[in-house]
Image (cartoon, rainbow, N blue to C red):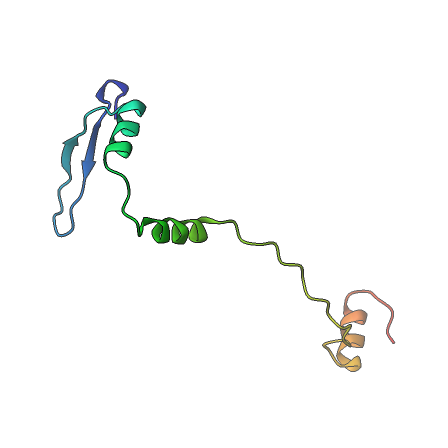
Length: 91
């Protein structure tokens, strides 16, 4: 969209393949504040806002669980073959 076309956008409605051009009027910050004072949120909006806050909160950092050292995943005979093929010392 060109910069001079502020407030112009395109919307694709469900079930229609062609985008529709729409135009919105400019609403200043003061206008938004006046509307918020004149039309306050309903009492149950706190529940909605709390849910949004939970959904947008950062994921807590979880420390990795300590792991017990485990033995080799390959049997000794296969490890010897791999070591020999890779130029290592045969066991």
